[in-house]
Length: 248
Length: 390
Ligand SMILES: NC(=O)c1ccc[n+]([C@@H]2O[C@H](COP(=O)([O-])OP(=O)(O)OC[C@H]3O[C@@H](n4cnc5c(N)ncnc54)[C@H](O)[C@@H]3O)[C@@H](O)[C@H]2O)c1
Ligand SMILES: [Zn+2]
Ligand SMILES: [Zn+2]
Image (cartoon, rainbow over all chains, first blue to last red; front, side):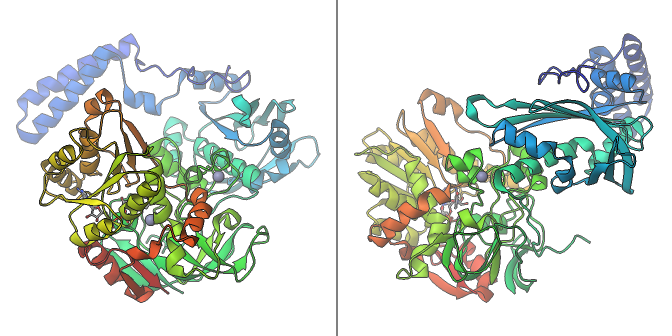
């Protein structure tokens, strides 16, 4: 599990092969495509053209072994590994890095203050100690409303690494990991972040979440920017109120 | 308050909207005294810039009086008379520290940055009244406007200068200046400036101040060309003269040393390539009409520089890249880093080197904005620059 529990995989090494079909899948694809081709030849007009097109796409898919739709919607190999290790049905992993124009010690101190995360993380309403004090209690926003769950810091090296994981069986199965590096040339601090979660509703659920902008990868990207702004400028830019009428 | 709002292509109205309020500690509210319509606003008016929403308040060239301040602003006081740069900048990020303020990392809100990143890879700074991709901020063609990061964004101006003299420090004067500066002018150079609109006018004047020996202005509006001639430029009317032949001949075959595109994505004229681009825009196949950029590349002297203050919004095609490479040209561009130029240009206004008010043709009330937009687009020869007073 290179990504989320060990060191973060270096950029660009997270495999997502373009040729992602097994031999049997390729054979099936070609056979189905040829069948459509035969049917198309018997059809008249637009229906025939559409069938023919679909058939040739399937044949091409089988011959090349590349299925872009499957690549877009399915799990990557590293995600499958995370799912297996975490005991989840499936996993989605998103990563993002940001550069903050401030020394590592300052960035770490502000980041490690978990209680202040709601200041910049839009989906987090509160983080505090759990009832017995040994765990962390998270209140986060779900499309359906606020949810509460417990988790804890699983690994920590000051100014270098912070990893947080939800407890087993929690309502929100998630693991996050943040690494802190000096940017080259004295250009501040880089945070390299990865979030892994069990998408409700599997791969399709993840895609739906993306469409509603509720997907953790999108949130991660925006939250890191907000955190950066807060550190660099002392505030987070907002454009409200614009006077724009809400869309009907 | 009253504000000029965009409701769609060629549909601009003066509406009543709620007054802005202080939201963040570093905010200020400005009571607008003067505001102008920019050539960039015409790209919005023509529906050329993506991510506008009906009801957006327009305007990015404005000045006025500070009437409210957030608790984080300590270098301004209520009553200060200020000009506001159209680029919003935090003053503290990597880019702001390098005075590249139109590239500020923090002034475009995180959600809006997503829109910019999707098409550009990275997000530039937020702008006032210039689409949601570039900030989604309410603009200054209004009675009041909220200015974020006001401590870096409000530039105090002395009482003895009139609004007309200092208003254009907000955009077009620094834009014309940076357009000339980016052209790497050396003494003795001949500089060709496409577009004799407000930006071109200031680029022409700046080019002379930066050491150009000759400046050639290209446009098809006689009034605007006359204004360029007043500044000492030679002129080419592209409707009646073959621009490429004229430039080659008048420079002894060398071509202009430096070329400035102060026209941007909506070139006029009936050149074949421009007609094709117009067709593509009409059916949504293309976004920009880079006719001027194409001309500049081919006209420019070998080893010369092209500076492009003119705004492009999306994709261009059929650029003569072979000419660009084989002639060893340099291209410089960008939204203007306005903050960087305000103090030095104010000094040049005070000592009389630059007279920004010469380009103003109309002073109207904010209520007249819809007609002013229409005239600034369709009656350009008479309407060189419109200033609105709320
Ligand atoms: N980079 C920046 O930060 C910045 C700031 C302000 C404005 N701008 C841009 O600068 C450009 C000019 O602004 P403006 O306010 O002067 O606009 P404007 O529309 O008033 O002027 C443009 C001029 O270009 C002329 N023109 C059109 N087609 C031409 C052609 N083929 N050859 C020669 N001239 C031609 C027009 O006749 C007009 O006079 C616009 O694209 C605007 O968006 C950029
Ligand atoms: Zn402008
Ligand atoms: Zn900045």
